[in-house]
Each structure stands twice: as structure tokens, then as C-alpha cells.
Image (cartoon, chains in turn purple, yellow):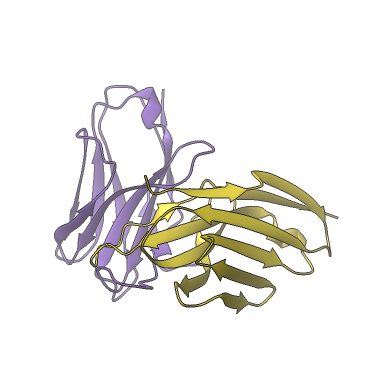
Length: 115
Length: 114
């Protein structure tokens, strides 16, 4: 158990809908990262927040947005969902915002299925 | 374009045997290279982290090596166990001024059979 929690574990929805994924980082970690892993694909970095502020942005679609709240939990909002958005979404957390060897701890993931 | 390529794509071995997984990368300069283990449907778990100046790092039965000159890394698993069945992912962190974007390989799927 990494100490990172994600809810819900599974989510099934229809195209065009909007969903919110939630992540609570490990106690003491200030950074939260979101990743997408499509079937048989590598993890794709979406976005990073550090202490409430966006720190880095990866391949995140405009239909997706995220935020980190004062209690450091984070939410990833996915809107106008398409079939291709079906994937595992992972959250990770780390103590620092960057730097060499800054280890990330991954949550168990949310499996999103868009029908 | 920064890339991380892993081989083989999948591998089947018998319990108790050793195996070696390969990772070639073009990321340059880079800060560190990591190996993660990902069980099916679970989040990745870190096995080793090596900076560009290290050439080997061990974690129990897992030993990672790094050749920064040839931009190659390998993960050697000794005396495999059924619980080693998982995907093994090579990850490179670019030297990018403090940001923490990691570049992930597609992984090698290892199956250990009794």
C-alpha cells in the first residue's frame, strides 16, 4: 500500500458525460501527478500540482482539467467524454515538486470505461 | 524526440530461472533512470532509481544496471518467483530544470510459470 488513495476504483459512463476522479496524496506529500494508461500503452503524464499550484503540464486534453485543494487532495475532471478516454487513470504523489530522484508513489488507479 | 524503448515486449520464464529485461533511451541529458514493477490493474511500484553517475543498483533479487555512454539499462531478476509476474517499466527523468516529468517505456510483460 503506497499511501495514495484514489476514488472511485471503477467508473462506467456514457459518451459526452463528465466525471471527476479524486486523489488523496500520502501524508506529507505536497506534489500530485496525474497519469493516463490506455490499454497496453505506457503511462502518459497529464499534469502535476505542487502545494496547490500547477507545476507541469503534459499531454492533457483541453477537455480535461485538474486542481489541487488546500488540504492537498486533487481532482481530475474529464468532460465531453469519448470512447478513447477509456483508460486507467493513476495519481501519484511525492514530497517535493521536482529534482533528481524525487520518488513518486502511485495510487491504485481509477478504471474509467466510456460506453 | 525523447524516447524510452523496452525489450522484449513480453517474456515467459519458468519459476526459479533468471531473466534480463532491456531498456534503451534517447533522453539526453537525463537526471535519473528508474525501474517500476506494475501488477495487472495496480499502480506502479518503484524498484530502483539510478542517477546518471551510477551503474548498478540492487533491490533484493532485482539488479538494475546503467550504461550512460550507450544509453542502455537492464533489469536482472534472479531466481524468479510466481509473484514476479508483472509488467516492468523503465522510466527516465529528463534533466529539465526542476520539473518532474517522467518518460515511461511501454513496459515488458513478464510471466513466471510453475
